[in-house]
Amino acid sequence: MKNSKQPTSVVTGAAGFLGSHLTDLLLSKGHKVIGIDNFVTGSVDNISHLGGNPNFKFIQQDVTEFIFLDVPVNYVWHFASPASPIDYLELPIQTLKVGSLGTHKALGLAKNKGARFLIASTSEIYGDPLVHPQVEEYWGNVNTIGPRGCYDEAKRFAEAMTMAYHREHKVETRIVRIFNTYGPRMRINDGRVVPAFISQALKNKPVTIFGEGKQTRSFCYVSDLIEGIYRLMMSQYDLPVNIGNPVEMTMLQFAEEIIRETGSKSRIVFKPLPQDDPKQRKPNISKAKSLLKWEPKVPLSRGLKDTIAYFRTKI
Image: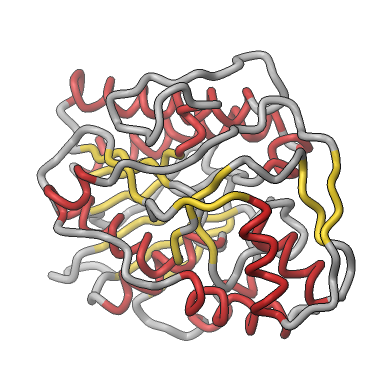
């Protein structure tokens, strides 16, 4: 990879759902990509198609440890983190460490290489929001000691660390707040609503809704999301930007849509609502529209068809 005019990107969490799709996009745009992952929640299946690609190098490593690379680096994309309720309830300390120590190490790499840095933050920093839809200026309503606090606070710390490096060390930084995203390469048992509903429907098992199903989410297809994130990295804006789909629907509506799209015989069952589960989730994407000229294009019906087709191969 030495002596090349091609841009070089480092992607932490490269074997994860979003990290692998980002890697594919970067390679398609002519980047050399160094992927880093320790496979705690990532999967080699997500990057196996890149075997033999001369522009892709993979390093199996925990990003909370020192990252040493002897090549020039232009961009660092920090996507490493457990990202589903099951993951961060089972791995609370690892989640906190990758958001804090991992972010510190990734920022140190960017500082050392003079590279631009992007942190994959989350809509979860808004907690159970008291402002709707959520704008970037909203500071959030988060329970720091609740079961979700390890993820929420890890990402809030990561944002604070990113801005500290920006102000103190003049590192070029970008912060994306990612809202609910779905698509191929999601883990079928990761506990998030899309794989949970689809896998239940494909098996004709009861589709489980928590609470009364009145809580809302907004679902963005993965290709739309990754395009928005790429545009943010290449922009000149260094404050947080929401990337997501503002089309809001209730969990009950979403479950009915999944049953319809899969042709399932499943019925819907209701279970108690988990602690601190956000009641509403909808991004205000006016910044992304104005600054990045970005908005989602893939309708839910089309995105679900591709996602369901992927899950059929896994069940």
